[in-house]
Image (tube, rainbow, N blue to C red):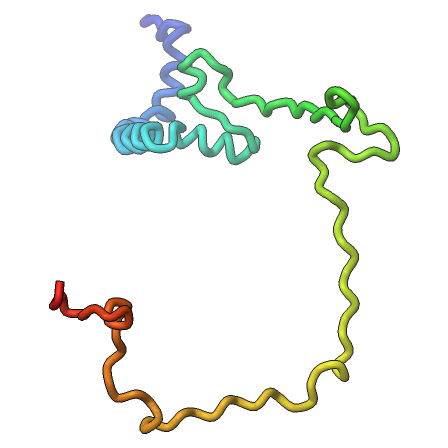
Length: 159
C-alpha cells in the first residue's frame, strides 16, 4: 500500500487552486510602482498615503516615516496669546483679559456712523454743463514752450 501525502502538503494542495488566479497580479505591480514613485516625487506621498490621509483627515506620508518621524503629522497645540495693556513703564501681560481694559493690539473704537442726508437736501436739478467753446475761439498758433515765453527761441537758435 502506498502512503498518502505528508500532512504539511495537504494545506498547500488545498491552497494551490486559490493561488493560480494571483499569478497575473505580478504584471500590475510595475505600473503601480511607477505611479507610487511619481506620486512620492511630486506630492511627497504614495497613493496609499493619499487614501489614508483622506480617510483620517491627517497629513500622513511614508516619506515622513522613512525620515524617522511619525507616519502622520501631529497638529500643533494652539498657545493662548497673552493679553497686554499699557502701564506706566512697560506693558503688563496676563493670560486672561482684566475687566474693562483694551489690549495694546486693539484698534481704536469705531466712529459713530454719519447721519444720512435726506434726499430733499440734494439739489433738485443737476448742475448745468459749461457750454462748449467753438473751434474759431481756439488759438491758431502753436503753443509756445517755457523758453519761448521767457524770451528765448524754442528751437535752440540764439544761444
